[in-house]
Length: 237
Image (tube, rainbow, N blue to C red; front, top):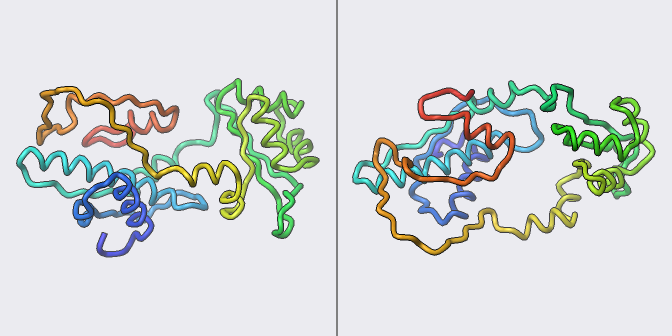
């Protein structure tokens, strides 16, 4: 982290590690490499790299409890970025994702712009809900024609209330004042709830420090694929 090549990754790692209550010294020697960047308006590559680095730092600490020297942690940003970038923007059915620009801007103090509506249509029931609410066939021109007559927030609300998933584009300032943005901002970065402890003779080993630990993963689709696609010493599938 000392070379300063990845300031956002460093900041994200510090925030994540601090929220976990970790010892700052543990992440002092964490390093990053790779110049590939995911095409996004936010520093998604750095956030992903920092998250992996935090997991690596925690594992390194665990290894150190076995009596061996604490291993170093290094994250190659290019490896994960290449995998994500290679994923086609298509639904589970193989059809293109729905994304439509609206000619109607929301009533804000900023100059009129073209709103962007993103539909989550990777599942048939979500896609069907969107088309039912808009009352159009699966045709982007038909969808755009309906959306152009309405405010982006209005479309978002109607589709969500109709059982679909949609999101209107918002600036950072708009999201900060949005009820959902305010609710998210009020939450801690990481929330840890400790349940009653049960006597356990489990102990980590240097070779496989996490062997024997069971994890309940309630994420869906991409997050689970990411977890399943990695194993020590292999490339993501």
